[in-house]
Length: 336
Image (cartoon, rainbow, N blue to C red; front, side):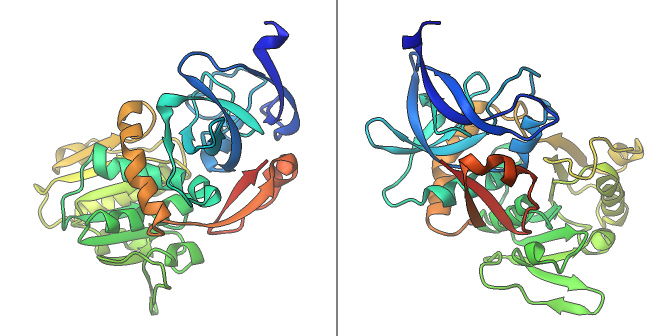
């Protein structure tokens, strides 16, 4: 490759899956047909970014060196600001500049905050796409979110409410934690804790202990599961055993696996009820379908109906930020 075909940038470079990315020079190939160069403005440090940089994500090719990241906000050479989804074949967005596939970007409205967009799009997208594409939510249906104690789970409760759920229940290990309480009223053994401003509105929303799922959420219509592992298996059987009408359809959508990559599921779970188990992620939903949902989701974030608390850090400090403890309820955004 000639010198005219590459440009020097700085990026968060992964040279070993056992070490954090390091801020160092990197050669960026020039854009090809259907691609564009962007100056990166903001990139969220999502759990998905970390799993990709460690080689643990199921889409990992194992090739090094690599520049991680799954999405970001950048400025095109003509001055337009866009949100873009990273292409696995291109240099990732954790860089001062990168090349994007122009089919995988959406122009942002004037005045949109790049940090807000970079922070919220990824955690909101999983539930947004699940409830609009994977199992389209019908007005008034009820939704259970397993993992409401995490940013994506708490966001999923707000998404469900926004999309017309009649009732939203979140299940968390600590239902009165700050993150879980952002999404709805927390129920615990000694009563309820009122949700703060910004919690899910437009539907009844509450957060309960995982141990109480069978009692409280037995007759929900859709489950968004960010946990998997043993907690999901236990919750699944508790809900199925407690259903008043086992012929009532239950759609269980597996999204994340923070509690473990596998479960032990009795076969009776799939025979004793009208129960559908499916996943939502890269491969389960086409890239075209994901991209079609971006403009509407961006509108909700720009309007402030879906948001996350953020903290920003310079991209040059990526190695330090990578190993620092995350503040609950806050999404780190790296800015060049």
